[in-house]
Image (cartoon, rainbow, N blue to C red; front, side, top):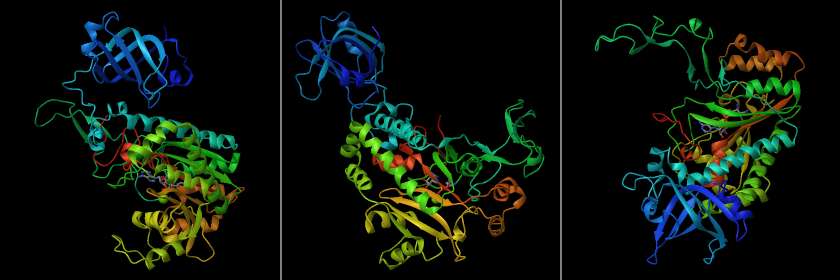
Length: 478
Ligand code: 4AD
Ligand code: MG
């Protein structure tokens, strides 16, 4: 008999059905009357299926002792109405097949609650816990909902390169991609052996990138935006959704060195249109998760952060507030508080200010727009005031910045002024400048970090816990 996923059984099963399930044991209890209860989870949903195994099930006495937390099982039997109200059904086993044991002496996941720090050290097993199972399912739903949202509006999905030779954000936070580091065939002076030493075999202290694989310095992308602009200004609205990389040395619960970003880019669209799209987009993802991941969302609300559902409903019910950077800064500086980073006009808003604005002052998502030109990248549209650019950040409670976007500078003359201001070589941006020479149009876009979105949706505190395999300074296991 083929096995059925537990989620499908609980949804569509009927008492009397003969079924088989396969999964991992969460707990086992033995009754004095000589039968056992097993809670089995197969990852398809939060709920475990309760399995009742009578002592007369073939092989019971031989295997039941090894049916411990973490062991894998296949069970066939009859679905019966459950007397305990917790669930509609339980499975009365007719056969029990122990597939893989998990020695209770060494299996790290026992029934007690484990700290997230501990679970991070066993990222190969943490997906077997309720929390990480729920995160994986919600992440899957969000991922699909992102495609659905843009596809339903006629956006074209494009794949922008992961290896690139332009620094989109101009922040110099790129990981270099090189083949200049090679295993050297010289003898190791210590061991005397060959081919066990790695060195820069360029012969120079600074690598000679002209001799590198691509003939110039290449890096892992920090954003697919610049390439997305190429397609948006030929084909209409597009989006790219993929991994991005930042070599910033940020040890915060909001930063990863590798994260997933979705970036729409829309031609014939100004900052106003961009802000509207960002709001619709966030609301759509929130709505889908509340709708489709009820049990998981309920779990987050009960066990992880009791304000999650309220925050999400609040997001759906209100229009996002739009305030200019100048207004935002005025509110922050007028607030009597010991900021860790005191700021004035011209400075970047820090996480503490962003969270204050959205969590305490406005108590709802806000969009801050028109930032000082000196703190933003070269590609943003310059306002007539000469001081600000058409940038926008969406800030949400508990997370802070979740989206960063802008209207792009589509006037060649202005772009050149900005490239110079930012110390960038126009020759390196020759193709980007061409887009402004031939059929240039106002266009806008934004980037949403998938993991920041998941922090909002799940109430998890640390971004390392909403990506399966987090990469941060000093951490890249697996
Ligand atoms: O604000 P950012 O740097 O904007 C861009 O990269 C633009 N090129 C996007 C565009 O206009 N197409 O990054 C966008 C978003 C942030 O708002 C945040 O959600 C996320 O990406 N993000 C990070 N998430 C996790 N770890 C990091 N180190 C992140 N850096 C940015
Ligand atoms: Mg940003």
